[in-house]
Amino acid sequence: MSFLEIKNLSISFGGVKAVDDVSFAIEEGSVFAIIGPNGAGKSTIFNLLSRFYEPLSGQLHFSDNDLLELGAKDIARLGIARTFQNLELFEHASVLQNLLVGRHVHNNQSWWRQMLFTDSVVDAELEHRRKVEEVIDFLELAHYRNQMISGLPYGVRKKIELARALCIEPKLLLLDEPSSGLNLEETEEMGFWIEDIRRDLNITVVLIEHNMSLVAEVSDRVLAIVNGRVVAEGSHTFVKSHPDVVSAYLGDAK
Image (cartoon, rainbow, N blue to C red; front, side, top):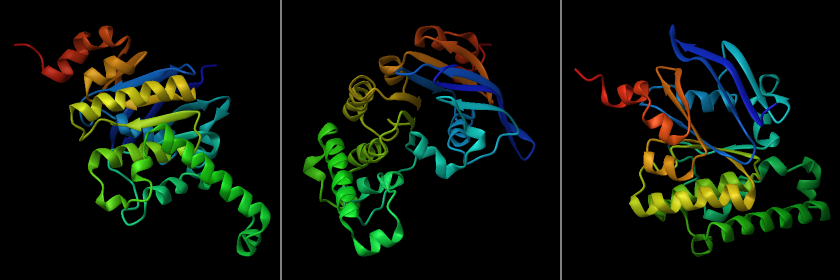
């Protein structure tokens, strides 16, 4: 079985199939891109993987686990982390505080130990801080460590949300439009980070992306979805030239 395997996945909203019999598999250690026009169903697939939505039919398997047997609260503990199209950061907290939130899935201390702030709680807090500092160093965020999110530019915030996802110590990282709102230089930097995350941290990456240059740069395989259905899968070169993909983006030639 592949590291992540999706079979015949479907879901409808108001009688309209947002995801229609979608199947694909992802190998461990790869970067896999999902592309398609707005409203194609890409983010819905992420919401199904995150267990925010319940599918009408299909199977979701991750690292020998049946995701349909789990709830949304179990997904991060299993080793799946995610970023969002719209930043989900705490505006009036510091960068460090936001990253420490990403460690909550590793908090296994009982409430009474936390109330008494026992030695085991102190040791756990120190370990959380150490892991966060590793991510800060990895993404070169030391300059922003103690700054408030509300005072930071958008590009830095995008990197901080990526950092918070890495603080979970994921095996699988879901990136929802990581280059959205970034300028050319920031987009190139995001490409470097994705490659480093795969190579240096050995994290499998799935990204939804509209920037085809970024997709071409980082992806091993690409899946194209139109109107909730898979229309092409393969290399970036194969997918971008597929007639159904060209038609979806440019319209049928008359």
